[in-house]
Amino acid sequence: RPGPVTLTMAVEINDGKNELIFTFGPSGSEFLPAAKAWFAWGDLKPRRGQTPKIFYVSPDGRYVEQRPIEIDLARKRTKVAIQHFSRYAAGWGPDKFSR
Image 1 (spheres, rainbow, N blue to C red):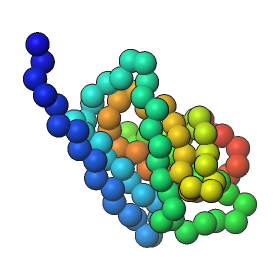
Image 2: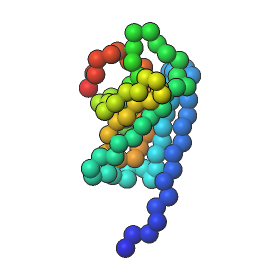
Image 3: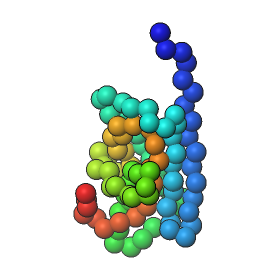
């Protein structure tokens, strides 16, 4: 029987890119079915004509946009399905889903 697991989360703000980086651990932990997670982006500066976006940040630094389940503009947060713990980023982008 597996022992207890300690979950970790760190959030960094990158003012230069106007993004938040979320790092969840233990890295690589997988969820089946996918877990639904809210990402808060209220600390980001709004960009006119753009919507908040959530990205998976791959180990080689590529940003892969995640399809939102729900965007809560009043609470400044977005819900997405995540398949595993890793690094994710919140930022701004065009209204259209680009994946």
